[in-house]
Length: 314
Image (cartoon, rainbow, N blue to C red; front, top):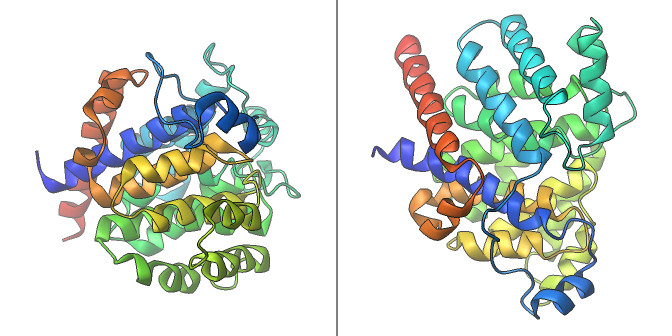
């Protein structure tokens, strides 16, 4: 297996497993999680481990990129529209999907152009949670990464904070794939997302402030609950930066929070999986995750698309 494919599998399995871990406790406060699962929080996956709309929508993004990721933006967004509408009507779309995603995609289905379909006041985390495949495919083309992340994000969430969170979540995957040292990630992120959203900048500044705190749970409370995009990205990145050498610790910490546990652990899992590769994820967890064989095939097709894309640009 090539290094890129190892990272790709780490990314896709990483986000899906993080999502599935957090999905079990999504609407529980931390005290309830610890009461049910122990003081360390939720530590293990059920068998089988079902993931939420976070992974379902990440899959839709990946499938669209496999179809059209080497084409112009309108073609990419047409493929994205088709995959999002498939998800909208899927019988498996019954795992607490976000209202903004549902409304934005329904508008696209009615013929509203993607530049107008997003909900202007929504800065929920629904666009950021699905952005990881964009960061993977366009690892070596950051301006295309920005363009596609922006377009896919505003098709459902048009608030500037959600825009910055979606672009930021994709870019964090690119930085992880690049092997950027953890201490350099925040400065690079802030440069890349500069000028998009004051709220996003503030959330990442809060993250910088609490990284040195000894009390991790206090830091998590300080950063928020992750229901909005800027908080979800800050919390997911915090979990990775606290445990850059351990996929397990990063996603357990992301899932064991007061807030949007599945989205936080999904984002943390995507960064950690991209940084460490699939070998960092327990084989037993990969075996338990829903649709494991399909995810492996998806990853291989996405990796092949990336290889062809690079060959065409060299």
